[in-house]
Length: 190
Ligand SMILES: Cc1cc2nc3c(=O)[nH]c(=O)nc-3n(C[C@H](O)[C@H](O)[C@H](O)COP(=O)(O)O)c2cc1C
Image 1: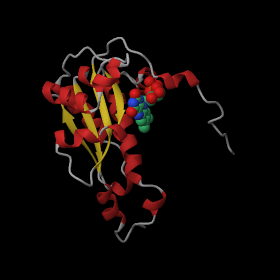
Image 2: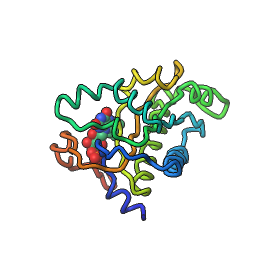
Image 3: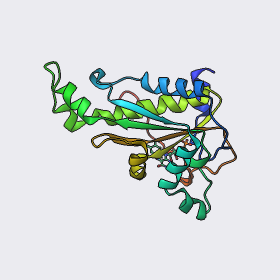
């Protein structure tokens, strides 16, 4: 699949058939995520891969899936074949930017770990499409309860969970009702 087609096909899918994702596909998607650029080549992004059905179910419960299903939404996390949890280590960036060739105050203006994490997220979403699968993103703001399930240490930030699976009929995000925002390209001058 060429890049233009992968970009066109990508969308957040929040409901899957429950079928497993092949281990090779998981590996390829994670490798794509970790192949991205990294500020100062700090490489402070890592991924926890989860494919065991019991652990997938525990994460879904911890994230409150029962509540959102009761409110009429699709079962999302529990139907995925894999959860790829994107983790960020700010200390790795602080240590790299304390080196003689870097300026640590840069991180006050832009904490680069969020940028590297976003690049990893997009690469993983596209790699899932390329593998003929569907993917979604469950933001880390709601993912703190998964930390003990996965043994994620203090100091490691959970950016969120990339859910990967075989697409089932789903409901698009209500946010899309806003339609495209115009005026986001500024040619030659803002
Ligand atoms: C940084 C970020 C955080 C997001 N967090 C969530 C989330 O927690 N739950 C959710 O259902 N969708 C989440 N989304 C998905 C957006 O709602 C979705 O990308 C947007 O509505 C556009 O839809 P599309 O990606 O299918 O084109 C997130 C997307 C991004 C980029």
